[in-house]
Length: 279
Ligand code: DHB
Ligand code: FE
Image (cartoon, protein in one colour):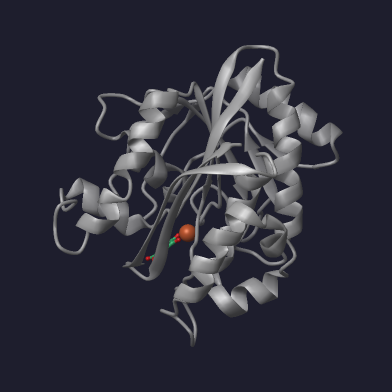
């Protein structure tokens, strides 16, 4: 049977990818941020997952404003990265697990999540920056990746509560897969940031820290906030933090915190990372 060995939430800021390409990890600006990922890499080495389900939002590489599904699941054997701007280097493609994806699709749709299935899907920085943070030091990706993209670009978007419920359904979907697979779930995005408009550049450290604490001990708190309430506190792009709730919904009510780190700012964003296991 497939089982969830834990979950990771992390920011996915493009500047992180550029810092890695340029070898800036040890510089004054970046050192504390990257040091915060060493325990995450260590944990991943220890649990040695087969599959990572990456819950993220596409930023216009695969979907654009004219057609954008609320929830889209990759159902392919292969996912290419492509030039999306930001100066990001294009990374090697990722292997998927098409059989597992279709199982997830069937289970989630039977649990009333009417998602879009994608047999072709380009993955952008929301997917690749976290993957690169964890495994770019290795000659090839040591895991298979399954993209689960949630729209946060074109409103209206799925509510925080719906994302939390999706996580619970995702758990049932994973745990009903008959093959032995160790699965880690990533929820990527956030924390507070706004890239456009009058409030461009806002960061709310108090919200970010409260959010990290509540995701651990009281995810209902975040799930009960409306999209407008989250954007008022965390900025328009800060709403990406709803991805964290998908990951959290897939874990037990009680979790053990393996690692927690917050660094501000990275580019325009409060950058948080959590590693959680079921208690
Ligand atoms: C930044 C953050 C993001 O989440 C993103 O998708 C793009 C840019 C930033 O802070 O620069
Ligand atoms: Fe983003």
